Image 1: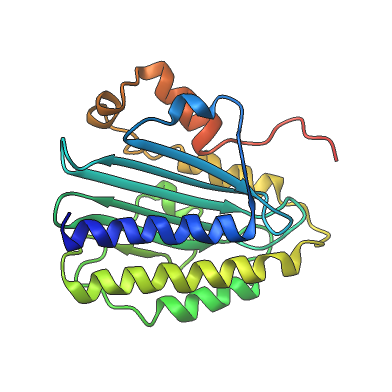
Image 2 (image 1 turned 90 degrees about the vertical axis):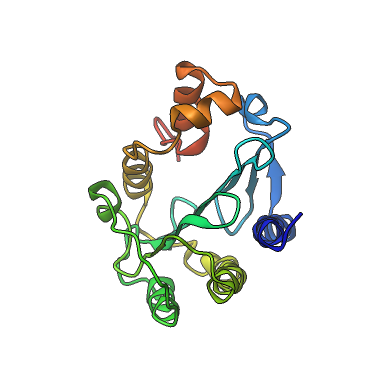
Length: 232
């Protein structure tokens, strides 16, 4: 295993350790279908956050592909932003890295302001242009990098994940008793994420053994589930 692979796995393990420390892993109905030898889906919940999902596709041995998706949703009476972090990598480079504290009811939430300050400290050789669906939900300071190969940029990502995850998990609970309800904003985020045509390409579907129906179920029910008919 080379240093690049070790870097990717260190990010995954750092997130798993953070969620194990702050939450309880839960077994969502139907999720067991989407856990395989090269595909990990884990979900945690706690008094601080409603749902933290870590999704890792590891096809390095076959195609060189490694993908990680992580999303943390606040509780529904919490105006804190939604934490999102995604990496798509091939054997020796990260082709896409996206990270954001995406606003919900409070567009000026202190956590968003903190993330804005942090994001301005980073430098990337090449940034990614965001598609229209992403511009609807991400903050103005979303981190979107591509073609990450240099060691200093890889180190930035590792340190970034540790810093932003620790901050988010330590601070998200502070606005848990907000008056505003955020179902509409969280659903809007999930709906627009599902407009991404590159969530699961045919090549990835085949490598995971999924047909079109299986992919639809995963995306709708497990990756970005919307909330309906919820009683409070």
